[in-house]
Image (cartoon, rainbow, N blue to C red):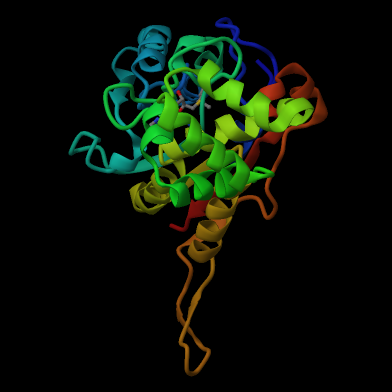
Amino acid sequence: MTGHEKNESGHVPVLLTTVLDILLPSPGEKILDVTLGLGGHAEAFLSKVPPNGTLIGLDADATNLSVATERLKHFGDRFLPVRANFRELPDCLPADQRSFDVILADLGLSSPHLDDTARGFSFHGNAPLDMRFDQTRGMTAADLLNRSTKEELTFIFQEYGELPKTHRFVTAILAARDATPFETSSDLNILIDALYGHEAKFVYAQIYQALRIAVNDELGALKSLLEAASALLAPGGRLGVISYHSLEDRLVKHMFRALTTPQKDPTTGTISAEAKFVLLNKKMIVPESKEIEDNPRARSAKFRAIQKLS
Ligand SMILES: C[S@@+](CC[C@H](N)C(=O)[O-])C[C@H]1O[C@@H](n2cnc3c(N)ncnc32)[C@H](O)[C@@H]1O
């Protein structure tokens, strides 16, 4: 399978060839996929690590986890699914499995999240505004719209959505929820259409993305993941992150720069500690136009990777 062919489930793992070429899963290695999704990258990894290489796959989403578990069951005990948020690393892992040769994070949502309108991630159709990856805990998008302060809402739409007319939009949310609390995507869409008029189609994606990032505290989770993952890598181990939003990519870039830069004594300027990691790609890698054509979701993907020195 090449990087942009669909596999048998019809799901396209983003940047697959690049991920395999750079993270180089090899026979006998231990892999941690912290965003298992439908198991596309995981399946490719597992087929590169026989006879005894293993993969632990994490996902916060129960539905995706069970689809991936079914798909990967033929790998037997070489595959272990774990229902967890990656911000719970390392505690969510079995106590004797805390060292990996390859770790992959392919952030954000998966195609079924958008396709299943009942999950509330999509602005198409009408469904309860949920947007939680893990539907057993935390606030839904409707809760967030109904309970957040004016300042919190302004931060969410300005920072995570870079939304024009944020102040007017937030004022409209506050007025609307006083009359009737938000429940469904249609409640939100009516407000968007009323405020943005013919520009509405340009801001839907920004508004829904901003809400999703806030509901799942995606940047907070990513920060915890990056801190935990560097400690979970074995000497020579590789960590790769595919991100889809400039705020995520900025976090990854800064963390990777800090890990790959020697520490200097602030007074003398001499190196006080060598860097423990190297960058595997100097510049972020983005998909080629053919992959974007085949899989529009890959459009905003950015891949960065580091290796722990032996
Ligand atoms: C882009 S998809 C991964 C697709 C996967 N690489 C594949 O090939 O099928 C991202 C997945 O990560 C999960 N996810 C997002 N944030 C998470 C988090 N903080 N902890 C655990 N899983 C998370 C989502 O539920 C989704 O299934």
